Each structure stands twice: as C-alpha cells, then as structure tokens.
Image (cartoon, rainbow, N blue to C red; front, side):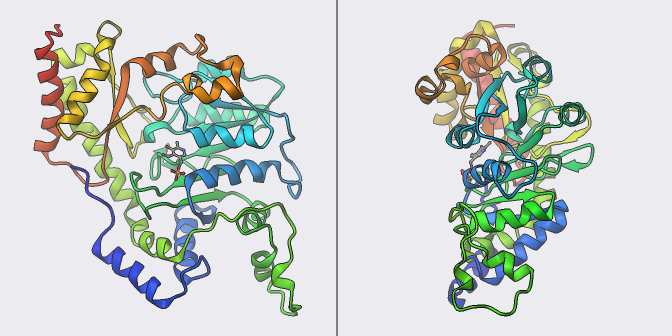
Length: 398
Ligand SMILES: Cc1ncc(COP(=O)(O)O)c(C=O)c1O
C-alpha cells in the first residue's frame, strides 16, 4: 500500500553523487538541498545524519556558551508523555530536568490544559513533539511561550509539511528538527534536518554539527588568509552529525513534493475517516483522531483508539491487521513514562497514574501508517473492512 517516495530519478542523482566521489557533506547536493529547505521554511537549515542527532543538537544549541540567552544545567523543560525516546533523552543527557505533560487524546498532542497546570517559574522551555503529524493549537501555545519568555523546540520529525494557520510546523519555535528516516514523509534512508531563526544560532550549529571546528563559520566570514592549520581550529564542544552527499542527492528532488505529499496524506486520512465515521459500529467503538480546524496535516498515521470497554481487544486487532498486511505501530512509543528506561533515569515518573489521557492511548491505541502516495479507494476500504470484520467476528456490538 505504501510506496517509497524514492524515485528512479532520486536514485540516479545519488549514483551521480557517488560517481563524483565527492561523497561527504561538502559535496554540492547538501548545499543545494539546504538552500531549498531554507527557501521553503524561511529558516536557517542544516542537514544532519538523523532526527535524533537534530534533537541532540537542538538542546546543545540552547545550552551553548556562545549563546547570549541560554539554558543552564538543571533547567526545567516540559515534554509530552507521548514522545519519542530521542526527543526526551537529550534533555536528560545534557543535564536538564524534564517534566512530563499529558496529551489530549483527540489530537494526541500536548494538552494545553495540562501544560497550563505544569508551567511554573522554573520552566525554561518546551520540547514540543508534533505527534503523528498533528499539532496542538499553536496560537494558544505561542501565547504561553511568549508570555513566559521560554524556549520552544519543535520536534517535527513526524510532521514535515503540516501547517497551522497556513504556517509550517517547525517554523514557530527557536529551533526545529526533522527526520528523513525511511518511514517518514520524504527519505534519505537515514537523515535529518535542524532549522533555526537566527544567524547567531546558525553559526553555532555549523560548528556543533562538525567537530566543533570553525571551518564553516570562517567560510561565511570569507576569511582569506588561512594559516596551514586554520581548518583545524576548534572553538566549541561539537559532534560529527553530518549527512553524506549521497543521502542529500537522494533527498534533493523529494523536497519539492512536500506539499503534494501533505495533500495525499490528508486525502488518505479523510477517506479512511469517512469510512469509519459512516459506519455506526466503527464510529461507536473508536475515538476518532481530529485535527485543529486551522490546520492542514501531513498525517504520519491514522490513530485507532478503542473505546474503554473494548480496549482488551487492542493487541488482537493489531495482530489481525498485521496478518492482513496492514502496517501498524504504537502511537509514537505509547506513554513514555511506562518505558523501562524511566524506572532507572526518572523514577518519580515511572508508570505514573497521573497521565490519564496518555494511559488511555497507550492501553487502547495504535496507528495505521499513512504513505506519501495517494491510496486507492480499494486500499482504504480494505483497512476499514478489516476492522469491521474483526468487530463482527468478536461480536463487538453497537
Ligand atoms: C517524534 C520523533 N522524533 C525523533 C525521531 C528520531 O528520528 P530518527 O529516526 O531520524 O533519528 C522520531 C523517529 O521516528 C520521531 O518519531
């Protein structure tokens, strides 16, 4: 059902990059692709080797000593309970204090109601995760961010191309991250992107992405009188998170399809939602996911959340769909406070009963993956018919 977004032309571009033998990030494709993202999002853009690296860079940037206004070790960062592992880990790894916020089970995204309860004078930032491509009400969220003068990081790894009020997700915060892993909206196999608002941050990121050296910053400054070792001047505590030019070449022509892919994903979602809403048995027994009226969502998946009284069927229904070649996954990682790693690193949150909505999603939900290609009516009907068949088989009634 899901077709890869990689075309023969993309493969030819990658082969050309390989044949040029300029295969590191300094090849021309990386620069061209970054320019395309810059134009699209009107933000400084750097390609990296994964969405996880982009997340680690985002936190490193906001803590960086070269930044005038910055986070300090120990500062509190709010993060939704439905998140990915490497959305949360950089917060812990770099010495900040994460505080979980429950999600809204309709949007699957951070609950503004719970956010307002959790935010305090100690809060210095929000690490927002746009789950399944959807978002919270960004107008309301930005009011909270601006009023409290805190940082906003947008993990847009599942939401490339989604818009709120005609503005792309990933263009609201101080820093935003994207993933080009195989199952994402566009792909280079592995790969990611980090974007930021200011030239100051861009310069810090250039160094952090590449060993902490000054080479790329010197290039912008057009420094001519290089000493023999000026390419090896280390000014910051960096990493090597660079992408290869072969990956950038693979990505290059997919970028122009981001909006088309959103339209396809929106249509796939709409068609499946229509089938479910029009069937009283399905409608009665499922919580239907919703998008904010002001948004256009490039859906990463369609969430199936069973009603409380039939939640025990979740595993069996998921298995049934898999056995019929429907790709499904947990909703990001489910309620992350339930993950074993939390017991070791954030024991006070481990399996906390307080995150009621997340618990519901974790217990009763999964999502059906949506591709960037337009599904046929037959494909969509297959999904809804299979769920219906399962409900009838197990006498799930109206
Ligand atoms: C919300 C979110 N953040 C971050 C990541 C990590 O991206 P990557 O696999 O490119 O490291 C993922 C991966 O699926 C994700 O869903």
